[in-house]
Image 1 (cartoon, rainbow, N blue to C red):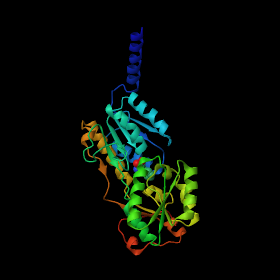
Image 2 (spheres, rainbow, N blue to C red):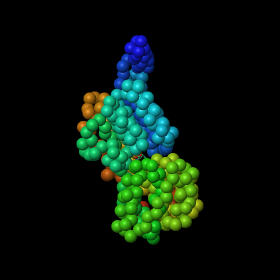
Image 3 (tube, rainbow, N blue to C red):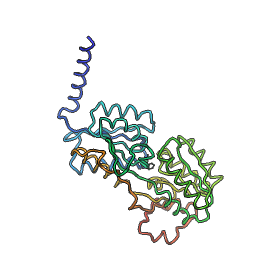
Image 4 (cartoon, helix red, strand yellow):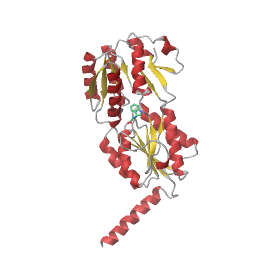
Length: 324
Ligand code: TRP
């Protein structure tokens, strides 16, 4: 009886698989942690690039997209579902997503996207030779360069407030880098943490009383709370340096960072290589250390009564954001 039931069940699965994918097209499933501007940009550029490479949903490929609404708990069921849908490749955008997707890598190749520290997040041991069934792109944060920029724009700073969500491994890695930089340059660092907008806003207000500038890395929770956080900092007259261009666009003062559209495209390149038979573990993780831009929000700059030093004004890598 049990056997019969198992047979029916497996038949049911096969049939449902057939009806949703009758042509047995390759399936690429993309999981995203939360809908903040940078992750959306990565996803959209991934989509665009796949289309450019000739992949059309329903025609020669099936795409599934899922968003965990910022809840790590949702990621588990999303990955389960992707496995049930017999995905050929799972794309995981942001660190918590990648950490959850990694367990599917036994069966399914995983391409992570925009993971700040893939080694620290225990996704790969060696960036150049990931091995196993996983690879991806990394938006490593150049914390030193951001703090150098901060020293140029706000040379009198002595105490840096570091704002982040302590449960994001990506941010913990950057905290260590910021601590090392501050120690080497005679600066103090004070931490402020929060796991949602409310907690982060409270932490930011507390920090503004104690520090000269605030620095947040490319933390997904901070990125989702930028409207409120940048307002808090501007009202307190505190320069808010951040870890991604989108966070500058959303009111942060400045950063040094990558072009995430490019990262989304290169995530697509990796997926296509895997669809063509390459092993994920043989593809080196792509880390962006060059081609960095200086992003400054003009509106925030003026609201704080600051001006850019000429060296930055004349820098060819300067990208101004925010209307005046
Ligand atoms: N690097 C982040 C991570 O490892 C994801 C990310 C990409 C991000 N772009 C961002 C976070 C912009 C904040 C802001 O999870």
